[in-house]
Length: 606
Image (cartoon, rainbow, N blue to C red; front, top):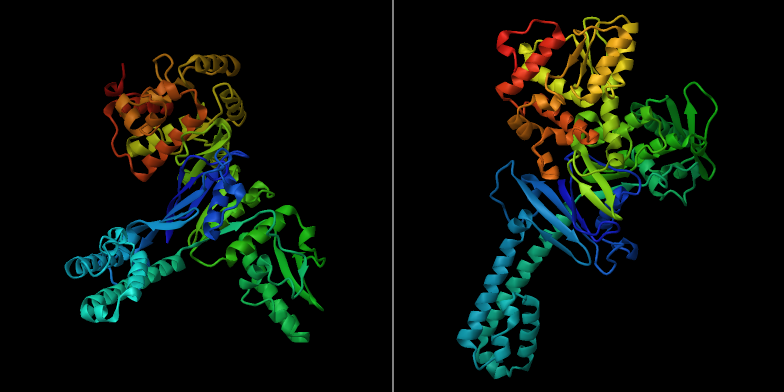
């Protein structure tokens, strides 16, 4: 069972109803500090426990009840949770179940329509038949308020039954005998109604039994202690520790001597081997060492004899160890909620965290909050949901390239930049320096699109800088290494100024410096035809800014980079298979200039 979306209303800093859609595996809630990221996780914790406190009411509307709504998606097998009925559904079908929790809890969606509606229809039909018996045979025998009972019209079987039974107690025996058939008929139908209600309640019980639970990992409290006694063994982190070692902590208090030592060694070996598969900063041994009434945890470094208590290790190590224990211990069909994972860890260790999260997400949906670029995989930006605070209230945006300020987008931009620089290499056969990351994405995407028809060789690397001025530093670097290169500048004021300095400072000729086009103020986006730009570049961006003009997004660096990244991903996935002749000709012409090959007259552009 997966979650499709969550809606939150009147909960802490979220006042107006906000929806957040979830990926089937890993969802990343990104935003700066105090934006309300943790509020989303706390809302799901309250949903799971079905308990709201006074502090959970919206800051701006304390009188309104918090409401959390979760849309689950069930497959056909999960739908078959009761033997009361069978469903005529296709094997690969998916069905929505919407659970709402506030001061009351109620259910909606296709699952309820399929599972509950038949019982409700049977109850409704039985109540209608009761009304017919009253109207056809018992007028003048039972009170008019029972015949014209509003509870029957409202399908409230409980109140009608209560009033009917109360009436029977006052009916003389001879009257009951005279109308025995009618009264017995009503009693029988009321009993059938009770059976239908029991089936309905059983169905709800089955639904509740298969709902996934939400497990919230608190980075600051769920830390493995130095030791524990048999009085402490019910601590959650200790229970989780032993659950992943196939041993109960109580076993260590039930045996003595050599058996106790053997058992503790087995537990230590089980936990250490698996932990080191995920933790790559160092090889460690985690040992459980009993001493009288106490069980101690010790951490040994590789080839070291000196033991360290957990509290003597770094905050980062303590966090990673407890994080690993908590998530490995949780059973399948759990939704894992992790607030700011790896807060104490350095970048390399945070990448280990991301690898662990991705592995866990194969069996469990994972939802994390972060403002770290190292927990954002540039190849999966669709995982990101942005959270921003506007006038003190939290706003959620499900599209990573829309609706957030510069600070909120910073970790995403950084992760993209890190991804590029991490894989960046220089070629002896040729390099192209471009002004920025968006130029890199558009040119890389179009080189992929053109394939074998692209004039620029695959061995020529495209290297992004961080602006026209900084491209000069790249020029100096490549000249120092004796590598061949060309520099691509926008045909705007900054690009022309940088091109002039490049010629003066480095004695470059006209062939080494290429302008994006001959048209004044042109940037890379202007190489697309108007239709291609609208349909493939800013199709969703129009909703945000209401513009169809590429110049409107030139200065908005965050949007510009993310939109270009999205275009490259769509090209790579094969979502875009056709572009206009105008677009193809302009990019082909540019690639010819960058490749030193002669341009065909058919490709000359006016």
